[in-house]
Image (cartoon, rainbow, N blue to C red; front, side, top):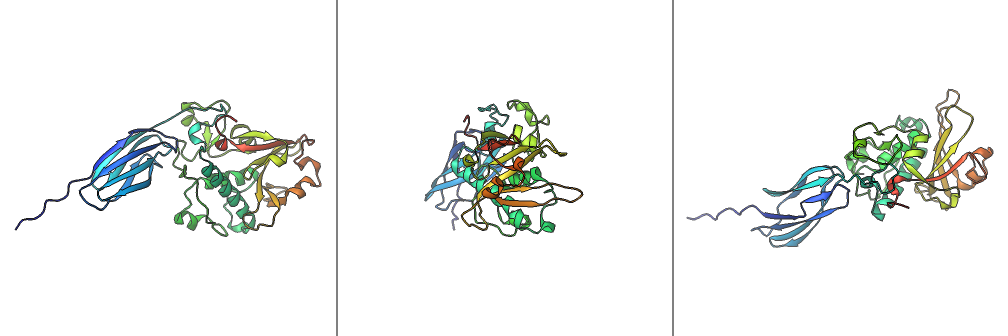
Length: 319
């Protein structure tokens, strides 16, 4: 009685075997197998690298491998076989704004996904009972940092179970990010002036904390002092001469994703006031333009209004 010989391990050919760690670069993996069924395929190593498509049948397949944004070595496993790809750091900063190009969204789908999640997460906290909000949200900048960071995670079931949200929307996540798997780890915010240098990754130039002034100066760029130019997810900055904290920020939501009514909204946290913890406020654009204190109106004639700013990660190289 003769037993058939076991099938040999799949033969893998990966081209190219070196990618830019930018979240978009891709390689093609050719798989040849003696079996008609595709063996399990998975990726280990450099964070965020993943298989995005597999096509083929009957022992011949092609998989598209998409780079993550963490430099290093990734391995694609197909059954008992594996192929390695090196992800290289690209330290270019084409806008010379301090944000490296590898952190920017190059894909319009990702830009829109980030905007939708960022504005939803911020607005959701307005509807969340104060006792159930994340304890970190104590002022205007903290609300922005929270929504920015959480917009970059993988919004899967495990995340939803711990997100403390009144509802979880059926929105696609930005494909580029799986925070905190970035070359910066969890330290997303630039806190020093100057264009990006590779040494910035390890010398404290990026931190998890940034106040409103730092968000304005080093993490966003000026768009206009005309509010009509704002897009959902943009920021409004003010500088008031009175008060302990002169710089203040608001989020331009545009239309509400939670209670759509055809109006445009802005959202902000007042910060602590007179021993009170402050509150999150949501105003229509019309209400803000007619705010009782003129220093808070986002109009060109108001010297306290610094203008509309847009996140550097949304910058299309040089605008």
